[in-house]
Length: 234
Image: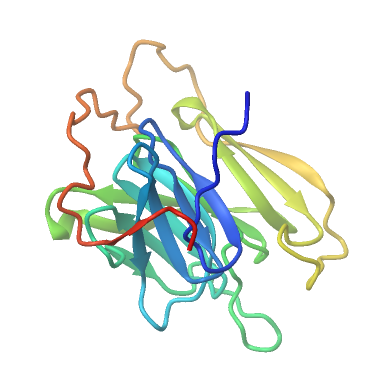
């Protein structure tokens, strides 16, 4: 393992990064943009959600051309890399307001790769599961709430296990990006949540996982509507 290079582009601090199979990680920053980096070409695509969209604190790639972002105003967005605006957005995804009237921000998000299952965390007392719809037609795209699982404290990180049998949540008294809030009675811990019960055939395709057996050879970002920029120093 060795340092390779530095990529420039974000105009403020980077808050999260994730990637899948291809050399194209997705990052989010305090500049209220998400960026898809083309490492082989030293360029990147810029995704802006508009003037009303706040900064994203977390990102999770679903498959090479789809990703999700969770925002500090409680918004949850679904993106594809050939569209500059979010395909679907849910305001106040963890819809419990703070005493001062602000909604809980999305602190963590994780999608099981090549699947239709995702989970988000905040400090509203619940880990929430979502169905991700990424079909070819517009009416086949979106986010649908599935279940909510009680967890007390800030859910600062989520990892969904193989075949969505379980997930692990990193829970703390304080948010991972600062110490501006606190849940005094929460315990700093790892919470393991069973998502599926019963025996699973190792050879079956999990009904929750829609694997893409044939990956497209071409780069899905070709012809993208996103703003493309060089990753050289700005």
